[in-house]
Amino acid sequence: MFLRNAWYVAASEAELGDDLYPVTLLSESVVLYRKSDGTPVALEDACPHRKLPLSMGRRKGDDIECGYHGLTFDCSGSCVRAPGSQRIPQGARVRSYPLAVSYGLIWIWMGDPELADETKICHVPEWGDPAWGLNRGDSMVIPCNYLYMTDNLLDPAHVAWVHQSSFGNAACAEEPLQTTVTDVGVIVSRWMRDVEVAPFYAKFVKFSGHCDRKQHYEVHYPSQAIIKALFTPAGTGSDDGDLHEHVFLMNSYNFMTPIDESNTRYYWFQVRNFDTENEEVSRQFDEDVRHAFAEDRVVLSAVHKGMANKRTPNIDLASDSGPLRFRRNLDKLIAQEQPGSLIPLAQRHTAEQQTEA
Image: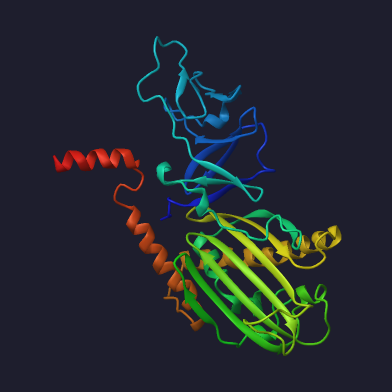
């Protein structure tokens, strides 16, 4: 089950060119393309005649022509041409989806289009701020249910074992976690005092010796994560007051789009407070981050298979508190959508008025 009244990343701006671009999102087939003015469009990828994917057809200006019998659809999903018919057949239209472009990504609203509100897209306050450098990131498909990814991104403890050569070290194994439930999701965080700097970060920090490290793992419903890494000289770490002049800050923005119940497309980028214009640092960052995420991919794909084929019950650990609370609250949001969740508001109001009459 998926939350549909929400924004998901459909593609990066770089992925979408002039050609028809088929994607599967929340188990729905969608075709993306750009109009002649560059504006992105998203339509149901199925001609209403015999359901041939429109992505197997061809562009006709800003319209799409089906490759089977030539039915042609405009950007709104309306059929504007039906060769061999005197008039447009009843029901000859496909669904169109609201889109928004932000942070180099193309976002899609899969639910009631009247509820699509661009202000609900994850806010990135550092974007465009010259005080922050940008690692533009990438994407990958991970063969697992998206909730195993939200579990992972609310679990700072896993880095001690999965990422021993990058994000984690022995300091990450035992320190207790603090879980906070917010209106938009769940935060799991902790301070680790007077510890070694983990391998990934050691090459970038601007101080020597031990550090105070804060892990801040925050996931918003349904599947957007903000991971904040803070390293400061040992003895200077605090949630109050000014930060140390040599503090290392990296905020990682992570967006998980379910393809279906068993596969997820993962998009990410990071911002950093050091070497903001250094392209070599950005290149090295991107390379190391992709390596670490590949480690997650191996583990999460195996977790998905293991849980799908389990012969004995699984157990939960203390570190699962945040992920379990996130899942419970997301389940409630999904349940609230179920009665007529995809019926446009105008139709709902009409039905309610008829019922009252």
